[in-house]
Image (tube, helix red, strand yellow):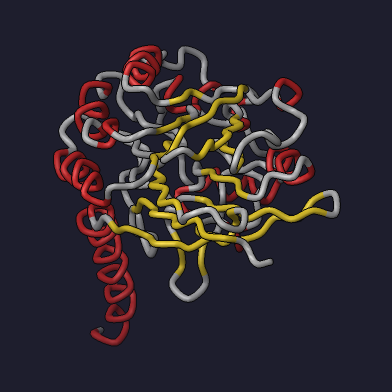
Length: 309
């Protein structure tokens, strides 16, 4: 009898332990990723860029708020917020409280689908099915009749008041110690709000450095930025796979990006050109799937250095 039931009970116990770890520990095990990217023109001093992404704030997430506030101690040259700040229509004050110390620094932002629309319950297995079927985008919040409108306008107004540069299908710039950093951004490709034609034409030749920013790293956006000659692209959205298999990695990216580049620094090639790309695994989850496994929540401090001659 013991042999007959021992293995199933052991598997059940291991599964329960894994769920408990993913929901109670790892989802709150915040990490800072540090990356060096050789993209600056010769003679330009290094720049420290803090990327925050996919906060998915739900009211009451005090530890996440405190951790985000603590990142101001890194003293970055500027901050890049790659979207999906909300997972709760009532979460705007807590997002602004969490990001308040960071808003003292120069910054820029794009929005993701969860900034515009509240999340809806969804079977996580559907992400894998949709990847196998090659279906991506417009398959989440806005695909459900009656999706909740999030108060993204309040976020926008607060970010703008702090001097952060909004990049929804537009260009902007930051002045950092006399350097001009040109920024080109897209609205979220996941819900087909991106309009690259409005910003096409390549980096600003009068700036010291240019970069592209987008929430969801869909190939059409990455290809456009790369073909136009941007040396660096920052994105989020993927959650690093969120639920990963140890020693294997992510099963899904929730877009048409390959799983090998679901998070971290990689290179993207298109039109005979190459760009560096960094995808943040983000620091949150959907409020309806509040677990992470083998993929801790993160922010990234990117140190941009001179490119090779």
